[in-house]
Length: 207
Image 1 (cartoon, helix red, strand yellow):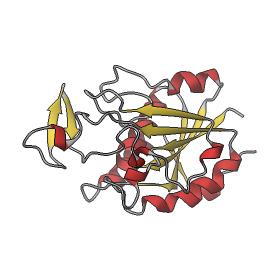
Image 2 (cartoon, rainbow, N blue to C red):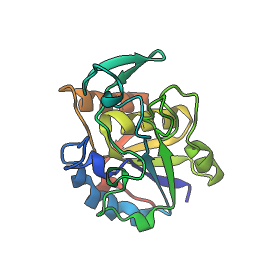
Image 3 (cartoon, rainbow, N blue to C red):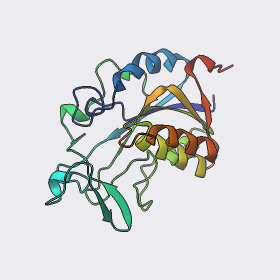
Image 4 (tube, rainbow, N blue to C red):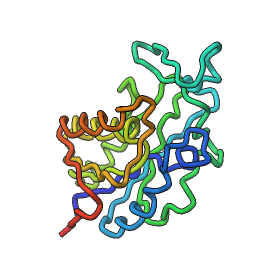
């Protein structure tokens, strides 16, 4: 099978009760679990920040969560501390069936640059290894789920398309932050315009 399921950052800090909780983020987990048996290759990305990460408002004097700064020419949102390495918040959600995951790629490990995409840091100077792994497995089509639609999911999808992977967004298996009212809707439009196919979990037919 030359297809893979990608689980983007389904971690405690992005779900209700977490430090950067996505509204109803936990609601996607039963859907994600239910479609896992349709795939042989299931890959998870994991936000994995050092405590001194530049994207944390707490590490930028005078900055508050939600502020925007320019970081090496890239607009950076100031986030609350989240998904800090070796903390409960960085762990995958307990109800996620992690026994089915075949490979994990950690991102955001460089304290000086954020990493929304599962493929690259935001400056596109460093890769996570996900692209090379997919190619080594002869995977040319991916199905993307996870958190959050308007950040890590979006940038993972856009990078996948730019790298030449046929990319499907499973719309009922993603949830967004929506810092601004239309962020999620605009993210979906952007992904679709770039070439992503928007499908529902019930549309999956792996024959």
